[in-house]
Image (cartoon, rainbow, N blue to C red; front, side):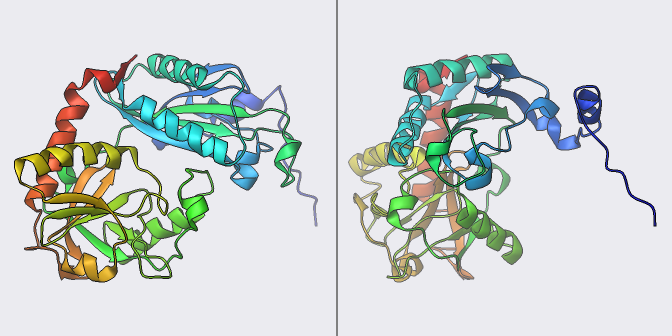
Length: 326
């Protein structure tokens, strides 16, 4: 039996090998800044991360994702502030500070040169070992990736979303409130949604209290007209959710909502809700038409969800104070 000889890859053939790895989905990858390399690449096959970065083999890092419309990043500073809070929670800092991350983000977006796109900033523990100790990485690493924009949910699904209760155990509050790169529970939740043929799943903790979705915040509108979101010490503080809360205050003033509260939400609250809302950076505000197989409200998007989604879309398009141009 002959000995199989594995291909040896070195500097003499590395680029040629990379060229053979191009895939159709690479058309959606626009730019990557890597602090390890000290620059930006626009070629998807060069968008590489060191295998010994603890981000890769331990999920040791934090990230935040934002949308860009009209060559401007929407609500970027809120996303970067959350990135800084998440980093602080796991003892991770960028030596040059948040202003430097912001500058590098804008420059990377400019290099990508796309009218509309998605940006993601990842602050990683950095290369240094294959161990579990964070102290084995001498310096953190920063990666900024720009890729294709998603479609707001209600544009593609005007009839509303179907939702089921997730069977994945809810994250403990200490981890749920940090946007870290260990997203295995979130991955399993998304797998549930796909396997079950629904649009989203939502978590509930051991006490039966609503938490969040795979990448989304959830809220309900009660029969009495109050907009409820989970307590902020139990879920990730969504930048889109907090912006939506500001718009909801206008609806309270106009009489379209009775109140806004952050409190525990049970499955019974969800089943009795007049509306259930799903909120996120890509999806904007989605209205739920079905929960656990039963219709929500009249089985079609409600007025509060429609109004809040419209106000958010207007804000994304026209609020120059929250638009960081590139």
